[in-house]
Structure formats: structure tokens, C-alpha cells
Length: 190
Image 1: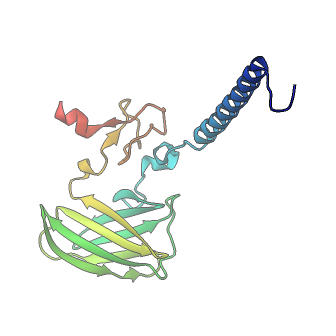
Image 2: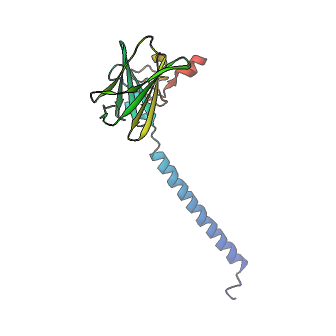
Image 3: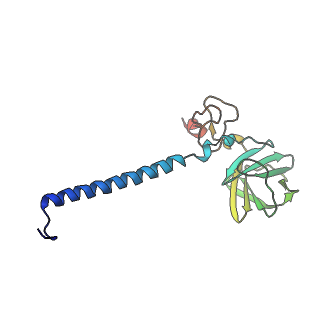
């Protein structure tokens, strides 16, 4: 038998071995991807620091890798820019803009200037706004957070077990008991 003449039985065995080998490689590659996805699947909402404790008594919003806290005081808003662990950041080189909304209309805007190196102050004249949109430019990246006047809408998710400090503006699990957070907006529709 020459090299070019292959027995049909031998060809079938080779084809089966080759197909099994390819199938095994595909399975192993798929398992590797699944393991990698499973080990990196921790979501932003599951982190315990996302109970969004307002260190200064305001509303806290997640904006990318940052947290922004807005505190409404008499005749002014105070805005804190916090890192991912909710610690105060160095504001050198950070620029910002506050946009004021009443209903569906923009009623004004104001550039943010740091008061010292830990927070921004925004003087407010006249009627309080229904929403304030804060935009920051940090290290060339824009981060945005919208704050509604009615704090009920700032934290849409809550723990059905009523654990303290579990309110959040993103879905996830309660940092205290681990129960999945419920969405107030869906409950209100029922």
C-alpha cells in the first residue's frame, strides 16, 4: 500500500480521533472562559461599600469609579467628590458644572469651584430645584450624577428585610443580610 492509498477504516479512525481532539480543545477553552467569567463576575452592586452611607448627610450617587455626594443646605449646595471607597479626594485639577432643572426644563447652570480642597459650594438663589445634575472632569474623564429633590427617587433599591443602610441606587444584594434588593419603582407600579 502506498502513502496515497489509505484504508477507509484507518481514515474513519483518524477522523474520529481528530474530531474528538478538536471537541476536547473547544470544551477546555469554553471551560476556561467560564471559569474566568465566574471569577470576575463580582458586580459593582455587590460590594459592601455600596450601601451609600452619606458621610455628610446628603444623597450619594455612583458615577463610574467615583461617588458624588450632594448636600442641600440653606441657600447653597455642597458637593463632595469621593473615590470608589467613598473617601475624600484631592480636588486639584478637577473642574465641574452644576445644571439646575425644574421639571423638564433647565433653569440654569454654574461652574463649580473648590472651597479649599475637599468640597465644592454652589450658592442657590430663589426656589429649590427639582433636580441637580453634577458633571466633573477628573483626569480627562467626564463623570455625571443626577440628584432628584425627592430623596425617595435617589435610592430605588431597598432590602425587603428592612436592614439599615441597605438602600442603594443600583441593583444588587443587601450588604447586611445578602438578600436581593427590591426595586421601589416596580413595587409602586403594582
